[in-house]
Amino acid sequence: MGDLVNLRRARKDRARVDAAGQADAKRVAFGRTKAEQSLAKAERDLAERRIEGHRMEPPRDERD
Image 1 (cartoon, rainbow, N blue to C red):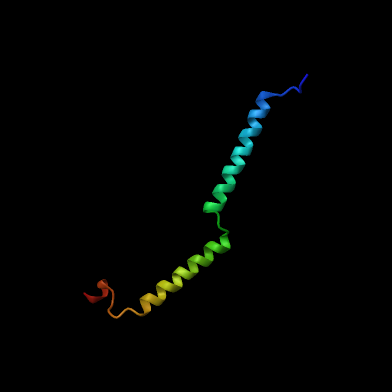
Image 2: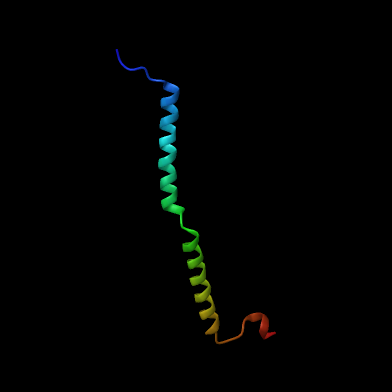
């Protein structure tokens, strides 16, 4: 005779494996470390300051 299989346990194991696969996919799509996020923010801020520093006319609220 074959081995006995607990269907409830097999279903839960399969769901656990599926959830782990989905989590891996989301980590690749959305996951960045805090260091990577702060570096990207610093680069955006620097670029914005450089652009504002080269502005030829004052912003609208200062002209009035």
